[in-house]
Image 1 (cartoon, rainbow over the protein chains, first blue to last red):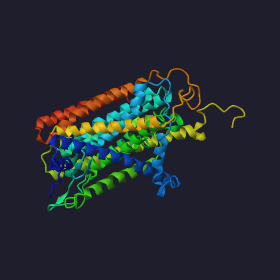
Image 2 (cartoon, rainbow over the protein chains, first blue to last red):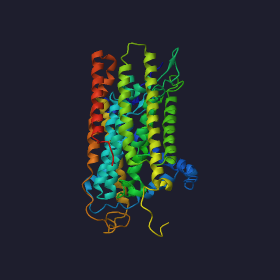
Image 3 (cartoon, one colour):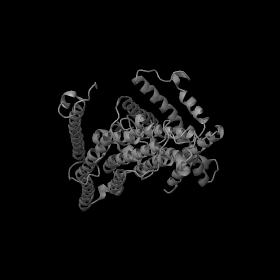
Image 4 (cartoon, helix red, strand yellow):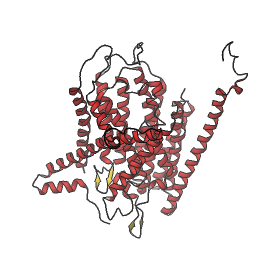
Length: 410
Length: 118
């Protein structure tokens, strides 16, 4: 197997070959690298918004944007230019520091995660040895930005939405962190590149690239996916922008580019969460022949990340919204205890004095058992809910439980 | 090793400057005609009543507290997870005890109805 060198070393080596001192070469390489990553994120946001509009409109039996450019591809650019010329209306009673900082922090916290996403062998912003922890740490900045926007706007709806966001994101942060933890327990590393490399499947030295952790740990993957839907504020967990209750969410009072920043952060964040899911559970850039042709890794990674993004949009177009008590119930009474027990089980299994294959089998069986238990709990909940809604809506069961209707009422 | 964090630092700078530049460009390109109606609190046309910065429900505070408990414990588990293969059996027992304590905290919060959402 040939090892692909880290891009930073290649560029720095090339620049020092041109006669630059080493410190400057490193600095220039890093600035260019960071610039490329962030430019990529901005350009992909245009594409992501277009994909969402097209997919959701197809689900709703519409055509979607189709006038500006081929297939409406340039529509998002036109929207961005329009937003650029819009007046920035600041509410009179807003807290200026919190109000103005919130959109900036929201975008910055999202974009910084890109630094540890492995796109291909050797192609990662920086392979930090605390990569997974870095992702977890940056997750909190978005939560803080949402609360700052809600509080700073001096609007009751924004404040209410801000509280809902914080409650939701905090609750789903826990199962997400715990499912990342199960991966770290199994691979024994927090390096994102090493986690991707771990998922190679070598048969007689040939890398099939199909040793995906999602196959071994389906429960962890599903719980990560559900939490990532909640973290990206997507349906069925988009309570914070419940239009009928809260107007728009915590960004009611924002206009122009400040609003666009929240919008951008949300779309890029859902793509990044999909990319993290692809790296942790679907092998990242792993795939057949990736050892021979490293650039194929980029193709595999992008296919997986955009595929997960499409699934997210599919869910966005088809699922109803959950109630806030259901949201909290599901996070704290189903996902968190389930993940904690799974983690404990995995800690025991990994110390059993048996072969590695049997350990993996036991981990797999534990995951399947967790999925089964969660399924049974949800089924019982839905049955109860069905009885409850029947009681409150069906007229036959209402006989004797309610006062007779007043005269003349239908 | 430490030069890796130089990249993170540069990333912070670039990631912060992009939204700042976009908002500044918007600020210089767009008109500024504030009037009392426009800068008023937006409530779908209704006149707003009272202050928006009101007392919030203690429920959110409880959720925040339980979150801190879990997040800190998860943070402590990350280094254990990385070094797990090299740990002795005694350390395994300690890890499981640690997670059990976490579970006990959750059960306590559950029994005290901190997780009920009314």
